[in-house]
Length: 243
Length: 244
Image (cartoon, rainbow over all chains, first blue to last red):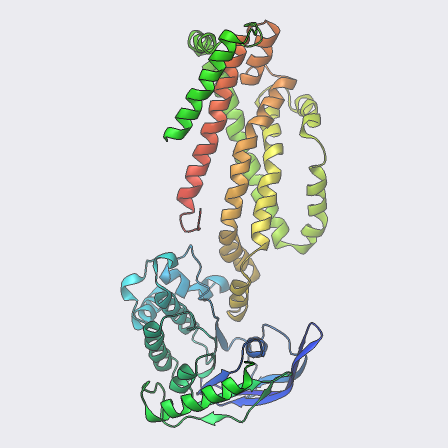
């Protein structure tokens, strides 16, 4: 199935009487990495949860460009790895099948763990894995779902710089061709991975016009365009954050 | 390992000192030597009765834990049951178990069944309450993840919420192991023809304080042994849980 673009139209959301965003519209291009940046608490996670169908929109709509329903076509990767502590890496990758009560495909799960570089840790419990390894298992679990749309909420923010750089490259490679929305705080991550960057800011939050990044992700960290854009993004984000 | 032994030695030493120099007559507080002697000379009689009490506690623990776990799962699975059953469960705790002991003996007889029923009664609630608490506190992130995976509610309960609540169930089982002897002894006091509680009542009536204390010592050993065994088994089973 070819991944659909996602159209967000006139979206509004209120929380505890306060307007998080109003009349928000954007289109996530099909088969590309869209990155959403913005100050903490601006409503990035809320937007992601509405798209994932975890929260109903107050107003407006979210739909797929191809007109088919979005439900069942979205995989979700949260800030925490959300691995089950009692299940080994392999069991965690196949969680979706367990929870749907359908047959588990251990060979495919093993191949995915192999692909994220954890072929030697299939039987390991999460507590025995490093933070980077745990997020790799979470990435393999996301891939096991094999959904055309992937939503990611700062999944790499808790990792050290080296693990983060490695898993960024891996994510760009294995998620290629899917419609991805990535939330991040890290301008470098945004510039390395995104085809398009959006900055969400203000109260109620609004989107600045998207920035397009030249070249194909994953871009090298010392790529000229990456460095230039990263500086530009930092300036924009700093201007938005209270001192 | 050393600390409990030291505590025990100090306790026995104090007991000995009070019984020897405290001016308390031996029919009120027998000396540790006298109790030790009773433990030895009456070992067959005590062992037979301890076995009865142990069986009552063991069966009560197993039955109460099973019923408690099933009740918690049923309440967690069904909002209707939650609305109807939960108030009844809480209300049932307002009835003192002591008051029910004569009823249990009246309905179930002087034998094993009434004591097992009493043990189950005191065990049921801590197991249900702890397990249900655990089932209701599933990490919200896991439930979100399950929703995006189009999970079926029955599998979310059995494969996500249930295993996640096992550490809470374990807390309930630890409490249950500690209170189980209360139920069994209570049943024996109201009416029985064997068991350590029966031995204590008999010895008391015949002014045999050494035998009464010997039964008490055995009962304490059973209670502590049971708690340690349950605790060890749970820690081994739940090695994945932090602080198991």
